Amino acid sequence: MEPLTINVVLISTYEMGRQPFGLASPAAWLRALGANVRCLDLSLDSLNIEAIRAAHLVAFYIPMHTATRLAIPLIAHVRQVNPAVHVCCFGLYAPVNAAYLHEVGVDTILGGEFESGLVKLAKRLSGPPEDTLSIPAASQIEPPISLQRQQFLVPDRSDLPGLSRYAHLTTAAGQSQVAGYTEASRGCKHLCRHCPVVPVYGGHFRVVQREVVLADIRQQIKAGARHVTFGDPDFFNGPGHAIPLVTTLHDEFPGITYDVTIKVEHLRQHARHLETLKKTGCLFITTAVESFDERILAIFEKNHSPEDFEAALLHCRQLGLPLVPTFVAFTPWTTLKGYRTFLTEIARLGLVDLVAPIQYCLRLLIPPGSRLLELAEVRQKVGDLDLAKLSYQWHNPDRRVDRLQQDLESLVYGSESRQLPRRLIFQKIRQRAHRDSAAAPDTISAPDWPGYHGFVPYLTEPWYC
Image (cartoon, rainbow, N blue to C red; front, top):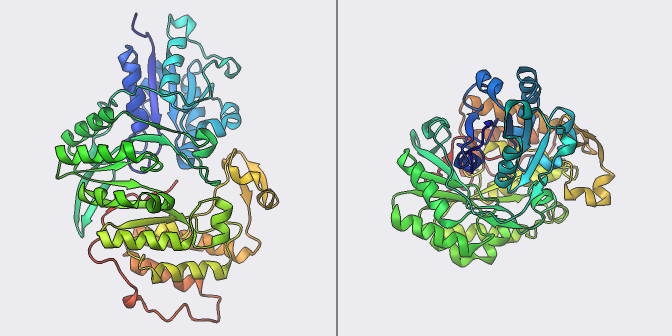
């Protein structure tokens, strides 16, 4: 087969401080067919105007809300620099925001298993210069969402910024290690109502072949990585895939550590595997607790209770395996009393040292296609879809709760810019949350908050969307 005569620019705007798998993987597929591919990570480098001018296809990787918001103004800029270029958006947030993305100048939308779609698109656009003019969005022939099973290629990271420029793992005060990132699976078997994975994958997940994952990790270790983040939405969607993977990794590289994300439900269901994670170098597990309020958990359809989380937390502590919870702290159902109770639970459970401060002020996003919109009580609370914000708008019935969220967001960003310790930030948050209350925050003072025994490793860029 003749090599593809096409110049492709793949762009990532933001991926939580990680070297983007979402560029490296399709780059390997396109280069295997002879395409001339440039990868640009705009979280670290500036837009290469000459590459844009020469491109036949510019594809933006938008796996999350922040990445999509950052891509929107760049799409117009790319169009201005190269009016004839074909613009594609791919990743989780592309299909659910298709209408708005087409409106701002995107021709092709690809979600789910996007590598094969990008290859088909590149083949369609490949040819003499006079045949590579922008194709109208209406003529897209590639499926906007593909869940086909793919035989992955080892990601090509050759022209991405070096791993040392990305988020590091902090292992002790003043000590850090270079961190890599890979994906062993995509999608999720579960249907949590608020999750952005669900509108695209609909309860399905797809694995990346084990040898491909191991080869990707090997090349990152060669590049300096001493820790690896597995970016799977849930590492225990397929324990039969995950456990042999980390066992093999540990046998080959016993000094390499890693972290994973696992649902509370799976921490309970597959508890027998947690000891294997600990033995094979897992430093911590991230888990989306979201709330300690049973009503909110039911609305989100999380399929766990506060007691389930507490039991999982205890089990992980017995193994010496830090469990790092994440939360959606502010929702239309959050009350001032409920938020104060949330902070009390954080202290009671000994989580102050484990929770990234950004988690105390995150606000629920309701993007197009969210399963939350299936509920009448949600539809009654939301306003119009704000296309530019990629979310349905809502206000808490108690405007004091909205003001508190805004205040805490400023407080956290300011505190983290000054590199204040988590305990001090938490104390400031408690004081602000109780500022308008006649009752004292609680009887536990900051020095007496239960803590994790030993240093809690963390990545220098916190997890959020």
